[in-house]
Structures are given as structure tokens and as C-alpha cells.
Amino acid sequence: MHQVNRRKPAPQPTLDRTDEIQQQIQELSGRDLQLWSITLLVLLVLASGLIALVVPNMVWKPRILHIEQNYLPQLFFGLISLIVLFNIYLLSQKHNLNVTRRALIRELVVNERFENLSLIDPLTQLLNHRATEHMLPREVARATRSGKDLTFIFLELTDLASVNSRLGDQTGDELLLEFSKLMKSVFRGGDIAFRYAGDLFLVAMPETSEQQAEFPMRRLATAVENWNLTSGNSYEMAFTWGAAAHVLGAELPNTLHTAERKIRQKKHSLVPIF
Image (cartoon, rainbow, N blue to C red; front, top):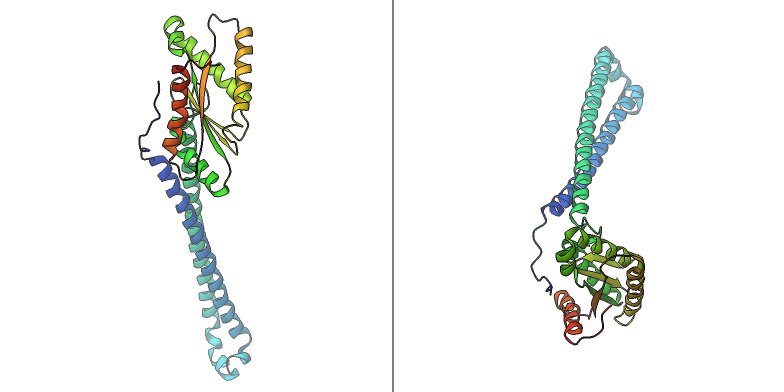
């Protein structure tokens, strides 16, 4: 019997790097704002200078302007040079920011793809055990905030070891795959299904009490029975399950252990299993 894994979550460098990239992208947005602020300031300074030259009576006395008229070509040339140099600097900075941003976004996309792949069981395409370390605490926190029910169900596919021994691992994989398909057909879109271990599955059911969780389990039992009647295989599919509702203040590992323990109790007490 599989025991609930109580290991502390291992460090997740990919997730940390993803957070770091997102922070860097936010910082680049701040640098964009700085560049636009500098541009606006320079434009205001240049506009003030032009106004002072074109409308001298508003700022200087006419005789002062007359004295300085010999220097107007140099002033205009210097002004144009300043504008050109500033535009070159601005374009260069914008180009560097865009290059950096594109590189960070590409890395972020790659990291997210790797993260998604690392959280999916390749055989059943359900979430794997590693995904529980990220998603279950979030569901518990959401249920705690909202005050709504949250139920966890462990499902054990019985006789998988026997099928592997008699018919080979490939047949065992086919059995796992077919069972996961039936699970997907029974549970709601908001329910979260995991392949927790070899023959052990876990489903988190938000806004569902332990009593309400019995209804999808009955539907799954019916689906398994129909599969056994129509599959034409030399083996049968069977499973047993145990459920536990999240209680406010309870530790998540304890709740999972309660659900897993009910499977053992059903087996030991010879309670009929599906």
C-alpha cells in the first residue's frame, strides 16, 4: 500500500527563475518609463529655448538679441546636433531594451513549457505527484478564504501488480491509461486529478463535501463496470477509494493520510470495492 508522501517540497529552480524573469520584465517596463520621462524633459527644455529665440521680447530685451544674432547659426547648428545625438541615444536604448525584453520573454516561455511538462504524467496526461506540491496548498488556501468545502479522494487501481506480472508492463500501462480516461469522463472540469503514484490516483474536488463526493464515485464505478463488459480483455479493471474533507486548521498531509487510510480500512474489513 502506498503511503502518503510527507517529504518537504524540493527546491524548484525553474519556478524561481520564472519569478526572476517576470521581475526583470517589470524592471524593463520601469526603464521604458524613465526613457519617456527623459524625452519629455528634453523636449520641454528645447521648446523653451526655441521660444526664447523666436519671441525675444518675451524673455530678452531686443538689443540683447541683436547683439547675439551673429551667433544664431551656431546656436541652431548646436541645437540640431543635440537633437540628433539625443535621438541616436534614445533609439539605442530602446533597441537594447527591446532585445533584452524579447530574450527574457523567450526564456520565460521555455521555462513555462518545461514547467508544464514536468508537472504532467506522460502516460495518463494527468498531473503528477510533483504538481500536488504546488496546487493542493493553493486549493486549501482558497477553500479557507471562501469557507467552502474541499474534499480529497484517493483511488487505488487494484491488481495492477498482478496484471504487470501476468501480462507485462505494457498491458499494465494500458490499464492505467484506460482508467485515467474513465476518471476524466466522470469528474468535473473544476476537479483536479493527479496520478499520485504507480497505481494511486488523487482528485481534489473544490466546493464538494465528502458526502457529495460519493456521486462521482458511483458514476465511476458504473463506467468501470461497463468497461469490463465491453473491453474484451482477459483482465478486469477494479478500484477502491477513500475520501477526506478538508477541515479548517487541519494540516494538508493529515487530511491526505486520512483519505489514504480509508482505502486500507476498506480492504482489511472486506468492504466491497468497485
